[in-house]
Length: 194
Image (tube, rainbow, N blue to C red; front, side, top):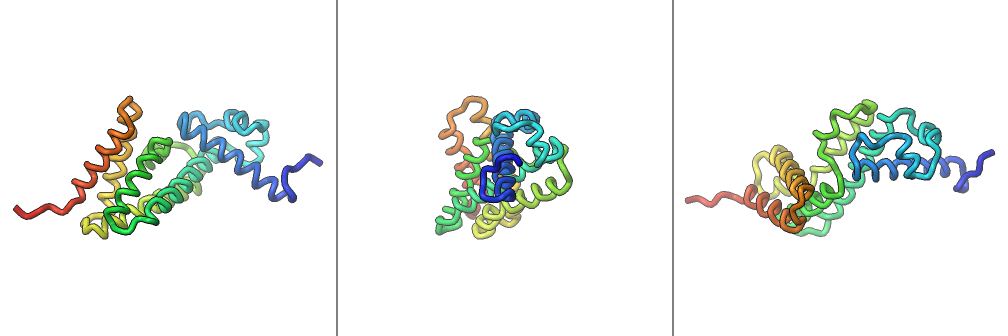
């Protein structure tokens, strides 16, 4: 019988699955979905490629699991960021800063992921997680009196992605962060009557 690294076989399998997903997330964030292959993930996790196939029967399933985990982690990060903020403005700022950090860390927008072949259940879960990801932003925008909070949240996501792309082209992150925050604050501020 093969050695297991946990008190039970079920726990051993859970640990190995988590190691595989963690390796896939790391590769996904650093190199994009094309680089997430069973061979690359196995090498990163220190496993045989056949071990990866034991847990994920296809490259699509592996990529789907990595994307789902990336979204799940982002949801936790964004929820934690807004939890301590007391006002809608403070929650908006906290959300934007955490969202910008996620974008810089490699979290890709949903639109960039929809062309990836993955199992249908993974795609459905990713769409659900994406909706959950923007919930705190929509809530803050609603509290601020923005009429179409969900639509505006989608536009803000594009602004954050555009900011991350500017950093990717060499602009200083702190400067781009300020630009994104200022742009969004102006965009959602009530217009003063003339």
